[in-house]
Every structure is written in structure tokens, then in C-alpha cells.
Amino acid sequence: MMIRKTLIYLCCLMASLEAAPKPNIILFVIDDLGYADMSFLPFAAGDVETPGIDRIAKKGMYFSNAYATSPICSPARAGLATGRYQQRWGNNWYGRGGLPVGEKTIAMELKALGYVTKKVGKNHMNNQRGDISHPLKHGFDEFFGFSDHTWDYRQLSHASKNKAAHRGPLERDGEMVEFKNAYTTELFTDEGVEFIERDFGGQPFFLQMSYNAVHHPVYVGHPEYEKKFGLKPFPQYDASKGNYKKDWHSQWGMGKGHDPDLRKRYLATLACLDDGVSKILDSLEAGGLTKNTVVIFISDNGGAPYTLANNGPLKGNKYCEAEGGCRIPFLFSWPGHFEEVGSTGSLVSTMDIYPTLVELAGGQPHAKLDGKSLLPILRGEEQGDNHRFLVLSRGSEHRDFVVRSGDYKLRNCTSGRKFSVGQHYLYQDETGDFLYNLKEDIGEKNNLYSVMPEKVSELRGMYKEWCGDVLGENKK
Image (cartoon, rainbow, N blue to C red):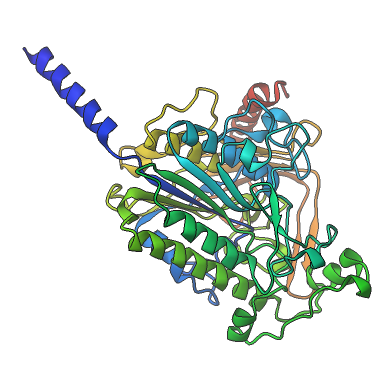
């Protein structure tokens, strides 16, 4: 009798789960956002105000130990989209690997589960010939944006088209569309709002808002926000005035000490982005969709040095495997469904977004994922790390790698790089072997490599395990 009642209960439970509406999903992917450039954080930069982003944090979970799969955007975006280490197919760095045919993506899975899907903004999957880098090939029904690594915020017409300067019309589902007197952040926000406000006849939607803000060129500002921040606008690039990279972007875009207001220009770009986030959230509220919409907010990698993004307590920046390059902002919100609101130090990855969303949509994540569902943490069922360890690697041809496990981080760095922006910023990436206890030393100042040989050996063993699995090789 007891067995029969249990079976009836389980059948009723499964039926109720199947009958529950699938949540809408909005995934914000911000470009090069500084780790400390959100005002809700206790260590937030003093000059930052982000009321829009803060709205997500107030009703969600902040992951303080979240990592991208790379400190640079294109491979990091591939790891996010597939829930897998992108090194599995040689997408190790900028311009490498693309997104091969045969890889499944979040959008593909959600589309198969009945979702209407759209990507807005920056794509940048390296766009290799014959692969599925283009959004319409990797699961999105619609795409509005661009596929380059950067784009001018304002010069969006056929007359301004210049490949070297990353200017010209945007793409809408394979067709080029031009705009005059427009600004990409606002265009992308309006596109997202229009999508949210449609009637999909009961179908859930997946909207990926991949803003190009706050990536360079932040000196191409929005006139209203420049005025708000007391900034003098730069003249728009004119091809007749010289080479874009040598004569223009190297002067203004990379800082070089010529612009004392560079940080303010970044903040003005961020303010416009933050207003866009608020407008998206407002559209959810106006449509009564807030309680049935999952909202995720991440940066693709760490803040960039040449915009003076603030990575707060972290060492380094985009391009390097120090914490400032790969530890990222990560918010997850579903008001009314997850009671856990606040922060967690669980070790997580952007790869975890894939299985989490597939499960929320009622699907079963495929077995070849490297990401792990966040649902046990979000439901308060588990409190530990989501991963035994995570690895960052530039692939077989480079020796640069990171193993993060528990409180510890092992880093091998052979390609030291120097970053400077006039007198404002200087970072020299040291070469060598490093071991840090990040719980006690988040700034990576105290190298424990020579005094904790057993911990070094343990983490090196994890790296060897990873190499055998992901790279198909064994390292001593």
C-alpha cells in the first residue's frame, strides 16, 4: 500500500513539473567589465553607480568565486556557449578554433525544448570557415549585432564603413542595416525590449544580451552621457586623417597618457549600459514577467587595462591568468523561486550556465559537458564548491596554465606581459611558478610555491588529469 501511494505521489509530482511553465531566460554578457565596477559590492570602486545591475543583485545570488574559461573574449564566449572547455577543439586564444560543427550550444538545446531564441549585440566566436560560429547556425532564431571583436558605438552607416576601424552597418539576420545618430548600447537595449514585449503564444524565450559595452573604444561616447560626466567629445575618426590603428586608436583607444578623462569615459559607457539593464528589467515588470524570468549577468572576462576598468582587489587584468583576467562578476536571479539571495563563495564557472538552464527548461544536459548545474547551490541544497578544480590553459603549444582548487591557485606563467596606460596604470605580469591561498591572499601577493610542495604536487596532478582528458595528452 505504501509503495502504491509513493508511486502515485511521484506521478503527480512529475505531472505538476511537466505542467509548470518553462521560465523565460535573459543572459546578459558584458564585455570587459571591471570586477569592482558594480556599486552593490562592498569593495566597489568609489566612482561607480550601477542601480540597474544592483537591481539584479538585490533579488539574486552573487557568485564571488566565478571564472570565465579564458581571460580573453572569443574563447571565453565559446566555453560559455557550449558548457565545455573550448581547448577541446583548439580554441585556445584570440583568432583560434571557432565553434566546430558537432558542438552543441545553450541556444540549440533551449530551441529544441520549445524556446524562441535571440542573440543581440556582440557575437565574436572567431568565425572560422565551415563552423557554426554565426548565431543563426548555433541555435538562435534571430540575431542583431556584429561578429567582430569590437565595433564603433556610433558610426553605423554605409558611408562610415571601414573594416580596419570596425565601423559600419550592423547585421540583422544576415542583412546589413545602417543607423544614423544612434549608439549601439541603446540600439541593443531597444532590440531586447521589443523582443520581450512580443506575444509568443505561450512559448518561453531565451534572450542573450551581449552588449559591446564596456569594451573599447570608450572614447566614442554617447553625447548625453558625455555631457552628464562633463566630458569633451572627441571628433569621429576620419580615414583621410591617417591610419586608424597607428594614428588614431593607438593614441586615444589605448590611452598612452593623452586622455586624463579615460576613466570617466569608461564610466559614461558603463552608465549607458546600466540604464539599458534597467530598461530590460522594466520591460519584464511591465509585462508581468519578472517571476517567470531567469536573469543571469556576467562579464566575458576581466576588466581591460586600456579602459581603466577597475578590478578592485584582484591582481592583473584581461589577457592574463592572474585573478583580474579570469575571475568575473556573476549574478543569477529568479525572483520568487530561489530563496537564497546574497552571495556564495562556491567555485563556479561560466560553463555551469549551460546545464543549469537546460535543467530549468525541463531538459537533460548531455553527458559530455564540463559544466555542472548550479541548481543545488541556488536551492540551498549544497554549500561547497561546484567543481573539484578548474583549469585555464592556452593549449598544448603554451606552458601558461592555472589550476584553481579549494582556496588554492597554482599558476605557471611563461609569457610575461606589461600593460601600461600613461601614468594611470601599470601591470607587469611576472613569469615563473606561483601558488596562492586566495582565501587569505586574493591579491596574489604571497607566493607559497616553495613552501608548500605537497599542495603544488596535488594541483599539478589535477592539471595532468585535465590535460589527459581535455587535451588528450599526459604531462609530467
